[in-house]
Image (cartoon, rainbow, N blue to C red; front, side, top):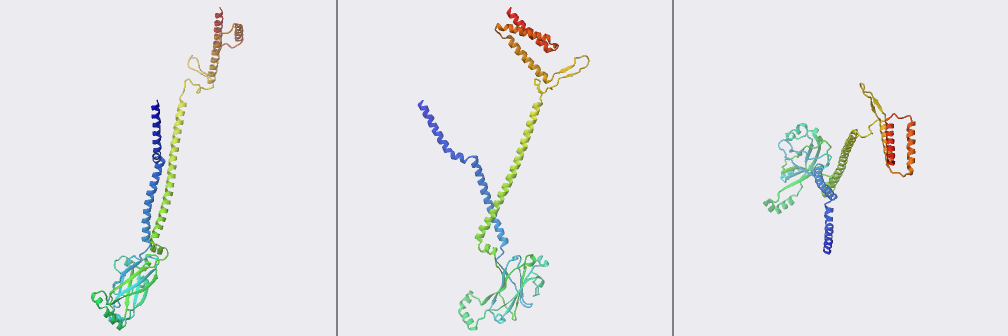
Length: 410
């Protein structure tokens, strides 16, 4: 017995230890924990997905909002029909309502004719697209005319330029000292001029107000030689564009987080709305099911109540009725519920009378019983009612009791 009790105690201790060890496992695998895991997984997945979407959205916003900060186009000058002139296609690289600094750079050799030209004029015109030029791929300025159409000119400017003056002595000394570099090709007797043409020029909204072509004309008294001629547009950012361009890391983090926060709030609002709508729909379905169940139950109860019980008096009427029959048959008599109740009460009274009459009483009580019976008989004889079936039953029951009593005395 002691060994069995020790074993039971050891089993209880082991069971308690196992239950205590399984408490964290049960807590980690409970339904509430599973719901928390599912919610955390959905939140994390949605957050990462929306973060990627926000990054892509910021990239698209940056691409569409920040224009190219520098645009360069090469001008191919045309010679032989007056002053050298040329044009370039700007395509759609410029943006409306954005200030630009426009400059013209010229790479010229230091030839005697260029030095003898002295000051020369640079004429630059920015031209808007036309219906005829928008459908063609070539510039409408490739012709013998050196003067653009004023009706399509968006901006126009004329600026002077000149090569840097160098005295003969300095020029000779510089040439002698740089002979090795000239021989090796590391140095050339040329100069690059960068002449500002427009400062902070901007264009109104609309495709017809943004330049599509640029026309350049060089006006000089002497014939000039050129290596390269180009036009450079530099965007001058202000306000938000300046912040986004010069502080792009902070801008990326700030705008991405703003996009992500708005996306999360929108998803949360949508989730709450969908949850309420779904819950309302489920509740309506449950209410409909409950209503259907109640209707079925009421119908069943009505069917059960509608079934007639041959032994029940609930379906009987309170009024007795007599229905005639055909021929010489006796009429049909229907006893109402009151008659049934009355008959049941009378039957109960008769049973009680029979039980009382059959019980053994003391000798002194026989005379009283006989007197009571004689009074009951006399009252029955004196009454004028004796034609009903109930009176006949009562009379027979009294006679049976008398026979039973007197027969016992004999």
